[in-house]
Image (tube, rainbow, N blue to C red; front, side, top):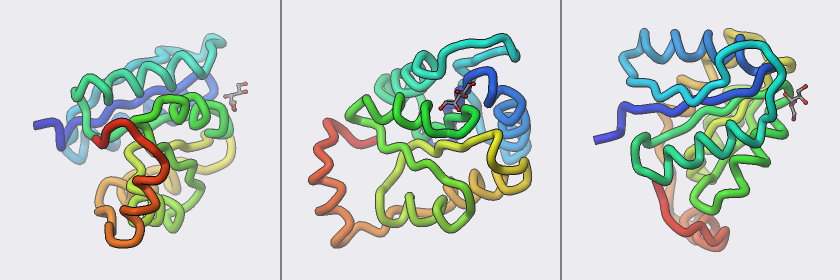
Length: 149
Ligand code: RB5
């Protein structure tokens, strides 16, 4: 079972927040697969969006969290993979709705745009909220994802 396993990745701009979120998730009892980056040396966010996507494809984790400066680049990178539904969130409302309506399997956050407490709240809501299904299932199906995680 990978229900309790979260894959997390960031670029250098997202690294400090990734570390905060990793500790927060471990405190909650989650198992973490951390694909890096491992410091503040400049790296390229597509590499880490792709690494998170690969872990999901391999079925080693059920949900992912990606972080860069704005959350934009790494969410675009993750969404290049057709089994990923990454939602870029700045508050708990967007974190809740990306699960309820979009069945997002990846939460994208912008470390330079939101504070640590908001980010932790977003993670908690993202993980606690189930997909609503119904009319939203039809719409998610039209996105054409190859598989669902
Ligand atoms: C890195 O400087 C920054 O461009 C990156 O973290 C991200 O914000 C890109 O979308």
